[in-house]
Structures are given as structure tokens and as C-alpha cells.
Image (cartoon, rainbow, N blue to C red; front, side, top):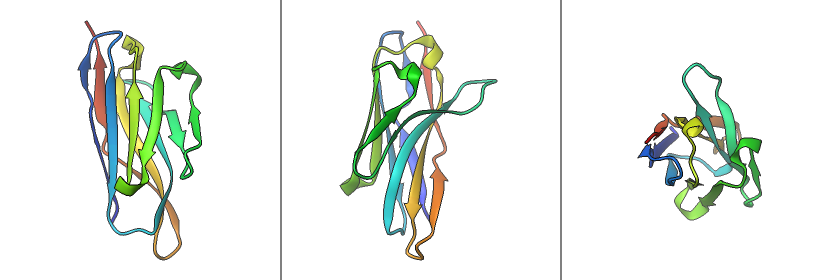
Length: 120
């Protein structure tokens, strides 16, 4: 069984910073791409950033250079450093990992989400 556990959410003032973490655990062969998504109330879940196993990154346009995704393969962990946060960044942030099992099947797993609130 694979489990993703996010942490690092919280309340921050506009212009502030947060660092989200997502650690994968369980029995698997390899983690391929890892991603961060977010979902604000009444809106669809949207991709924030993704990173491949060789550290190639991709960002949504709204990130505008404010966020940085990174990963530590030794720790099976992906991070999202968020700077210059805006009220519109408030959402539940979810991580997703594409994982290769020992049976050589590839599946997407999701974390439970961590809430980011941006308010003065």
C-alpha cells in the first residue's frame, strides 16, 4: 500500500511564504513524476507544478515565478516552496505521485491535502 502524507499548510499573510512537503511511503519500485494540485472552494482542482524523476519542472501560468517545486528522491519527498502568496492562492493543496509498483504497473496516488489560507 502506498501512502502520501502532506504537511506544511497553514495561515499566512499576503506576501508571506510557506513550504509544503509530501512524503511517499509503502512498497513500490520507483516514483515517477510528482505534482502539486490545488482546489479552492467551488472551483475545480488545478495543477500547480510538477517535477519528473530527473527533476524537469513545469508550472502553471498563475505561479508567475513565485513557487518552486523540488524533490528529494532519497526521502521520496516532494516540496513546494511558495513565496509572495496572494489571497487567491488559498486552497487545499494536494500532492500526486505516479508510482511504479513491483508488478510494473503505474498508478497515480493522491495525498489527503493540506490547507493553505492567505489572509491578513
